[in-house]
Image (cartoon, rainbow, N blue to C red; front, side, top):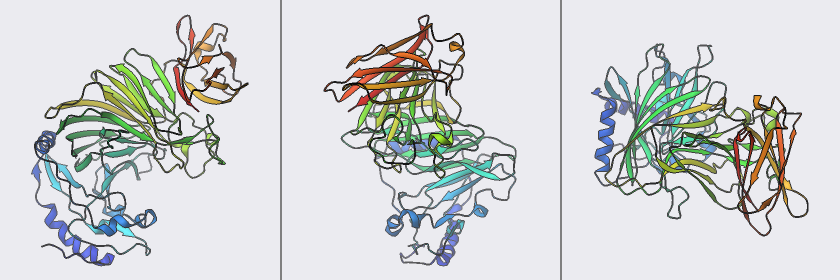
Length: 501
């Protein structure tokens, strides 16, 4: 039966769509991940067809109205069972135009989860909205016990295009990941592939990990994803992806990350704010194919900036949040000091390409303006099949313990005459225990003359601070590089920065 489009109160919505749920759920069907791969292969062999959107009034609601409706925990998947997880299904509307399909998998059998409006509650301020057969879920939220209290807390959300985000125990949500990025910052416009269907493997009572399968589709590519997700002090995801391009993909972003950087001590002149810094991430960390560790502080430029770090066989990259004290941000609501970093670790050789950083001008902290991803040197050809695997680690711990001394702070401003002054703080590390006399400063730029630099102990951090100046002249952009070395070997990370006028 096709529902006639009209406006209903919430009680009518519950009655109508709950009756449709039984029809949508149906019997289970045999399932394994190879079927998701075959679905993706079949999609790529056909012309792309966009899925229908939910009714327009759902899309017209504002952010505050969207928040007046929320999932009921007592209607979550596996609620009241002995399963180690519960899953909240999320309602559509606002930015989430096209509904997804959701299935549970138990004993190798997949069962669809039909849309049921009674899974949601609302305030008396919630608007009355159209109900018809195009309604569906927009995403899902995973919950499990994280703190030993017996309560199941949320730690991971899949919602919108191929976006997902996670946190370690005690953290707050910050940056996001995506399944795939296409044509990011290209003049032709970016394409956003979508996860269109999910399969959730039912966990055993004491099972720590949960397995989520996802089918992706977009005008240019279809794909099959498998996520093995283990929450804890850090949330670790083992990701497998199989991609089937419909078209030649010249600009692909693998392991893409999206974050926000508004300002910190490097440039406060544009923001009259009581907080010393506002950002979800403050730097891009790279371990390249030769084992060199690079730290690139993030920036909020006046104009779009794209930086490419050419490499062969990158070992890892990620967007991190290194300031971890409340006083670094002084924000009682956003709690930026509790936002996770995210590290991408390829499995196998990803070959030649570049870690690519996109920095977009932003004037408010509500905008995600930072993107980082691996861009392969060779395009993915139409009709080909690409399989890749990688690990994602969400958390506050550094991904490379025992490595060279980390950069923990960068500040800059006007120096003498028309030049600029830069200070870089490094953490206290065992290599500095014998003092700083044997530590060499290496500062360089292809675009500007730099001073040799001086090094001092910072009594606040215990580690070394270097300071140097450079003269940009009439240049609007200057690339800078600095590192500490001892006996010719790396004593610190390589600090890279792009200064803009």
